[in-house]
Structures are given as C-alpha cells and as structure tokens.
Image (cartoon, rainbow, N blue to C red; front, top):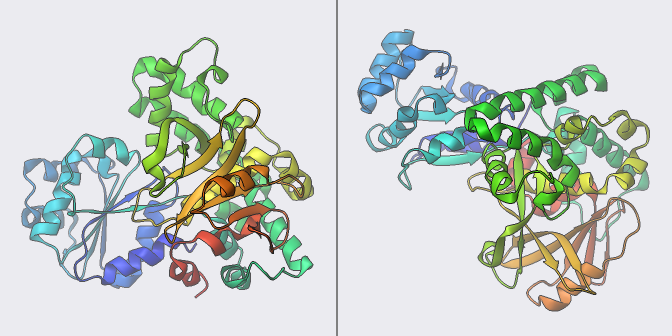
Length: 447
C-alpha cells in the first residue's frame, strides 16, 4: 500500500544533512509499515527494534547516551552489523524508553551518517516528559489514508492525476464526476485506517471492514488507562463516545453530560487530542496571518481521527454509503464536513504540526460561520462544505466582505467544478487538487 509519507521518507534518506526522524501519529495509521517499506532503499540493510517487546534493548539506552556504544551493543545483541551510511535503524515503540528518545540528539551530533527513524504509540506523551533540543530531531506527522491514497489502493491512478491537474473552470464529464462521488462514498464507509482499506481492496466486504473498525475502536479504549489517571477514565470514555455526535458544532461541555463540568472534562478532551484521536478546529477572527495569531483557544469544534471510526463509535450502518451514496451525503453533513477536515490534515506539510481553523460571527440576529480557513500564498482562503446540492453561501459572502485579504472563497459540495463571482466550487473529492502542499508527493503515488 503506497502512502504519501513514503515520498518524504525517501527524500530524507537522500539528504546529506539529515536528522533522526520521530514519526508521529495515532496508533495504527501505518507508521511501522511505512518504515518497513523504506528498507528497500537500503538494499535490505535494515534493523528494526521494538522497545516494547525487547526489554534487553531498553537496558542498552539506560547506561548512557553515547551513540558508538549503543550501536555496538545493539549489534552484539542482535547479531546484525550496523553500518553508518548503509544501515537503516528503526526504533519502534520508542515511547517505552524516554532515554532512547533523548539519545536521538546525540545520534545527530556524533553519528550523523547513521539513518535513524523512531516511532511509537502515544509518543506525544513521552515527548512532553523530556527535553528535545530544537534543530536536533526532525518530526514527520502521519495520518490515516487520504482519499487520494485510497484511490491509489483501488488502482485509480488516472483519476488521481486528473484531480491534481484539473481546472476549477472546467467541469468533469458527468459520468466521471458521479463515479468519483461513488468512490468517495465508499471511502466514507471504509475510512482511511490501513487495515480497513487493505480489507476492502482484498475482499470488497464491508462487514469485515466494519469488524476491523470496531476492533480499532476497542484498541483505542484500551489505551485510555495508559495516559489517563484512574479518576479520569470515566470522563475520557464519555468524551470518546460522545464526540462523534458533536461533529461540526462549537464545543459546549454541557452537551456531553449534565453531571460533569468543564473543569473535569476539558483536561480529558485534551488527552484524547494528544493521543491524536481528536483534532481541534479552532475559531479565529482571521484578520491577518498566521491564522493562529487571532485564534480563540477556548472556542473550537472537533473532528475524529477517521470518519469510519467515528461511525463505528456510533454503531452506524455503513451499507447505506454504498447503496444510497447521494442521500447519505445529504443526511450526514457534519460527517462530510469532518471528512474535509481530515483531508486538509492529510495534505498538510508533514514536517509541521497541523492545525485547523474556522470563522464564526456571533451576533444576536446575524450569526455566520465558515467551516474552515486555510492560509495559502499569504492569503486566507475561506472554505464552506455543503454535503448536498443546495445551501446558501451567506456566511461566505459576509466573510469575504469583512476580510479584504481574502480574494475568493471555496465551496466543496456534490456539485461539479465551476466558478461564480468570488466562489470557486469544487467537488467533495477534490481537496488534494486545491490544498495539497506537496504535489510531488501526490504525483509519486502514480509512479
């Protein structure tokens, strides 16, 4: 299965001044698989060590952080020669040994020829407990499969190329447009978790994919006790179950429960965000860039890690996406909006921690909201998501009138490509063609 992150890993492998990489992302998004694929670029000269499964490896990092000693002892323990400049060393589940994370800076300073990648589940919690000097380690952020990666998995390379190069002023042939909406509906049901996508490609059995979704949801629930205090577990579980019901809404903690208060729930919601299960979409006034400069941290919406997993938490019937795609998009507007957010994250620069923003005007007789805001070429682009064919664009017009730095707005909907006045209309499946920060990585999918 080919992933966008693979392009960036191959580019890193060739860099003369590379740094050790910490690969970050939620559990089961494919981090280990992506690194294993990279070993082909090293002619199989590859050593993978899981610090959760091999306690003796952990002990090696507890003595001191001298790279020469570490690789010598790792070689003796595994019987595998580690050759700087030739070997790829992969430290998986590195969060089990914070000292191993700290050692990465010394690999950069004292043994820069060695290619080192580290990854782990719940890695962000371990990073917070240690000091990582700026400029010594590179981060790469990984997400579930995007829709373009899903198209690659089902061997639709020509459609990927066409979406990436298509002009907003030219409509797709209607038959192609409808076919892509059907593929997107399938993606809404299967989601982007690699195991579920692999199951769909191999079996076309949605029931089996659904079983995988529920198993993944159970895995995330089992993790709660790893990063939550005992007294927090009930709050974390409550939020995990209720967030899929609140997609697209500004968070009010009273909607989650009448029995618990914000002071109890807010820290637990932050834990789920740190575990990369949830992402905040933060409100901003958006009068200038960067967007975060005028953000309101206490005002935000939430999206779930993956659209299919959020439906699994709710016990939704996925078959309707296959049988009645158009109606499902219309009926599930909040979920469609969340999918667009998921796409924006997937195509953001993987070297930077991603953030999402939205705009809202709260006035007694004139509320307005724009679903997402994206900074592109020193401009702020407002985005509205319309899950059906109708819907007015009053909020978008109000935003454009009050924000002269924004020359036009973008609508994602079931409509075909078109331009009318200051509104550029794109189909729901075309996020990559507009906002992918690295077209080379996407084009690499089709090679």
